[in-house]
Amino acid sequence: MARWAHTHSIPLRPRGGASHQTVFRTADEAEALPVILRKALTGPYARQRLARFLAAQSYPTLTEAAQDLGIHQSALVIQINRLERDLGKAVLERAERGRAMKLTPFGEKVIAAISTMQGQIASQL
Image (cartoon, rainbow, N blue to C red):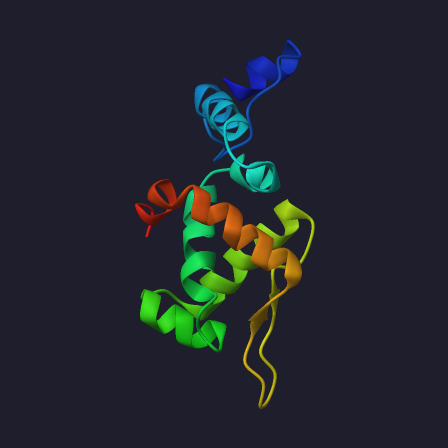
């Protein structure tokens, strides 16, 4: 089928991508959300990333947060990095020896925006 589509110059959706309706629905839902979060809420698992960021921000390290959330530390780091990439700015100052991680000023704005949609995000944890 892919070869036939290629022969006739028909574009294909990339493997593992969301269906067209899912992508459009997510984009439409993002319109009604706080402006600061719109860029972060257009991809798959976006609400899960926000929920995990919300949960992790109160811990001194991402490792401790991941242990309490029951996920691997690398998975949490990847999700926070993706969130930061989608938003265009850092939301956390990572922990260093003798210093716990903390929110950046932008991260505090993101937390405030998340709190306005708390019911939707809390259900993703």
